[in-house]
Length: 253
Image (cartoon, rainbow, N blue to C red; front, side, top):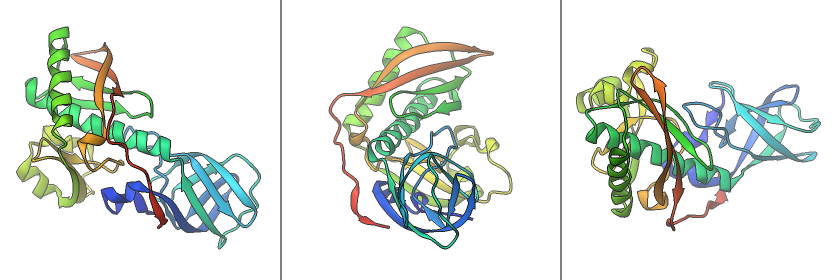
């Protein structure tokens, strides 16, 4: 089991450096007792960065795993269980994912609110552009204009983004299960990390990394829409403008 430091609080996402101990080695896959690296999951791409150990710096090119998180390195590493390492996240990529993922929550909340409860049924979060699948809906240009204006208005309001831990029963008492996609979560999961925008503009379970205020996102720009069949449409977007960008914390976890 790897302790996932980025899940401690939303603020933990702003750390760039952490110390850890190697617990297992499988070829070029390094398992640590704790990590700030986000592994592929929930539609969000993995973090990249470096591990610095007894034999120098190693580039981390891929991160996967739910329980034990595997950090794939390119070069021969000579690391062994028990070795101490310092991990460093590529901040530009991490922060881009934080902004994009928070934007996805905002867009999903606005679509549900404005267009008859259309659900988010899939998403892919990347650094330069991202996409969301909605159902049931058929966007036209007027709807996309309404969506863009509503999202950017909320960004300009600089609404806070917060997280908390709730049980399934607690979140179900507040939000409709179709809004939170509760049916997609294993029934064995009883306590959930909940991410909330403003006063429940969006509120749903999520293990991804996020900014703490919408002003950090910048404005959304919808690049295209595409039919995915059976009432499902995909929108692709990027982020533009001059957001209130932040730098990572200088201290080490």
